[in-house]
Image 1 (cartoon, helix red, strand yellow):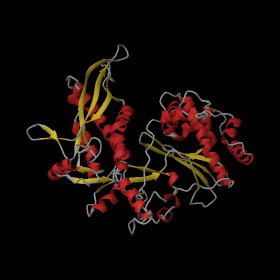
Image 2 (spheres, one colour):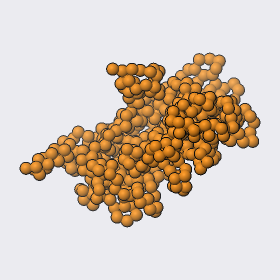
Image 3 (spheres, one colour):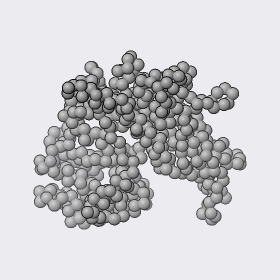
Image 4 (cartoon, one colour):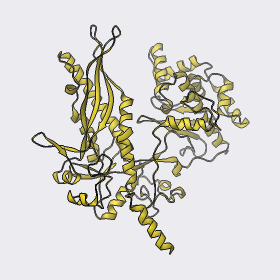
Length: 519
């Protein structure tokens, strides 16, 4: 009886095409909000027109972006709906036109900016996932699918580029914006390290806070060679007094002792001195004014970029960065005192999965930047030749199309990753389902990585314990468990912060009210 009820439950569960559901949800979210978010991040395309005297500056403002359903342009110029089977047979890409509102603005400091040209124009073509909301066969009945040559049992969840079916591999990565404390493997238990992968708008910066053998804290982050003294850095961020620094790190008497050692070793006492010292590191040999400017730019741009938020004053952002570094210092000291265990990198709470929508967002961001550079060049060339500036003449749609299609066709993704897109395994039906639910680790298969290949207790019910390849990929390429459900990231962070504040959480960053008491 129990076996029978299990079968009924399983049949009911999988009757709703859930096997590729995580791909559909992720890609649909990318089309609905992700694309627009990337365009809003870019917002404007600046040009060099106006640098010379007597010329008014010209720039382009980006507006709403939308994707229609897949179309094909025939030899006679007509456009018709494209279905997946036709794309496979004709060796063409199953993609849809992307339209964006663009406005060319002109105007200087002397006069009010005015619109030169404003229109919605086709900026390129976006490959569409078979079975997603924008797919032409979405919502078709079995009879309608058979009529157009589609298999009603086909799960979808893949792209068709130049007639080839390509699936985007779900990628496993360490959780961004989270402090992970561990011992430095090169020195055993002697050096404690707290690290965080700070991620914002596709940019990922590794920030390390380590306690050296002599007990001094040092911080390293991108664009600064070597490491910087912890006290110097937090003072540069605005946390000046010894008392503030110590209390922000910890109230524990043992940790306070460690902090006092660090304060005694500190060479700077004020924020101005700290920024001057940092300037000498990041721009040695340059003039003092340039050094100060560069030091301020580096700590605003490259240090913990995920703490940047629109509409928050720079002083507040810097103070938040100082508090965050103090939390990292506390993690190092707790590890040294055996007050905490090192974080397990293989624990699934410390992992995040990048699905189709997340991968496409990274790709679209790079493609949009390439398009922006091309639009800038075309505008400057048209202006030099005294031609009328028009949106339709400065946008070349093949620039965006090429940047979106080529990585899916080859698997060579932005950020130097390879094998992200793979040919769908059509050996049999189970092979297709297995491929759609596969995930890969970013670790190199040529290295041993024994712990990463092991079956971790937190994978129970999430990752299949037996389905993994033999040989070099063993344990690095895995598959989802049969009834696994993948949750999505929260798109509206402000809504989440308001919810936390209403529950009584104090000091939620990014909200005007720093102290909110709920019921």
